[in-house]
Image (cartoon, rainbow, N blue to C red; front, side, top):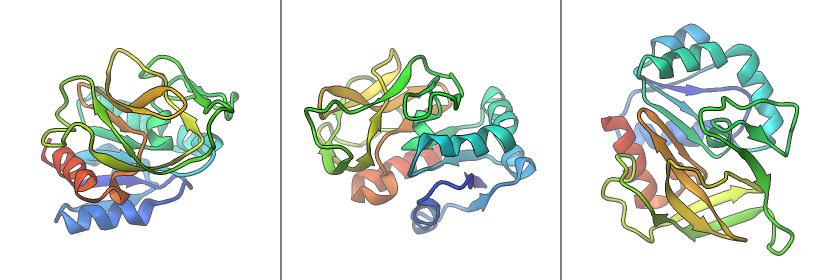
Length: 195
């Protein structure tokens, strides 16, 4: 069973519908014991990074223990940003610090939020992006972006290059919304399901 973590951030039902479309059993939950018993964990999210306070208070130990045991984890949008040390959007709210660096706002030279379709450029080998073509379009809606790190496997260009996808072992993060990204997004969710 895939646990879709409900910590008060948006877009959870869309993620559940996408997995249902793929025939993947998934359960929306805010219960640490269900998260701890899951075969895979997804942390979606739309909105302010401060929402991660609820995630940190109630579910952080269960999620991090599961990741440590090798359970596949997928962070989507704010869920991906939580994998970093934090965000300048809410400096008092810590991230999981599984990747180095802070998420930062887009520069004033581009319109923010970054909303709509944009391309991903593949930059490394990736199990999550298997059979996703280089240059595929995916759907974004965000005002803050994750930095480039050693484990960035895809980037997007908007006010400079930023991490579109990060991947290290059983930890995966996507800044865009695969549940809203058509065939490419469904391929990514199916690849995660098959891990």
